[in-house]
Image (cartoon, rainbow, N blue to C red; front, side, top):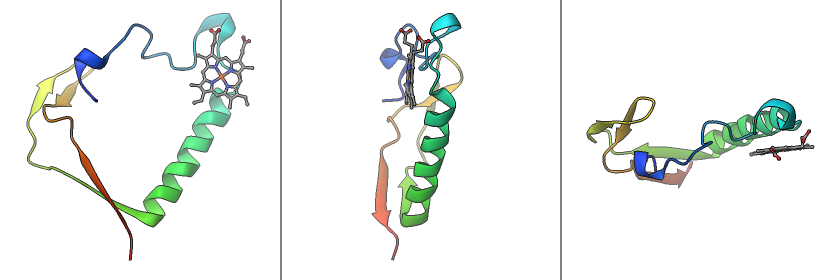
Length: 74
Ligand code: HEM
């Protein structure tokens, strides 16, 4: 859920920090982009465009959690 209640300490540092910073971070980010591109090529994504927004830690968050419908492209 994209809600402030779901935030935990360290959530902005998924790969750690300083001397223990993840050595695979760049590979992991590259893999995520490749996977996202494959998903976008094969599926359509739709969410509620009429949702309202509330202030969050770094910007606005959708009040309804912004559920998404995913359907295979024909
Ligand atoms: C989404 C994917 C990944 C996440 C979220 C992630 C997260 C992390 C985090 C938080 C740490 C720090 C652990 C600590 O402070 O003790 C870490 C360390 C490390 N990660 Fe990753 N990692 C990911 C992918 C990878 C990949 C793909 C590789 C290798 C190909 C990798 C190799 C390592 C290594 C070797 C360390 C130890 C670095 C050190 O202590 O010097 N990680 N990772």
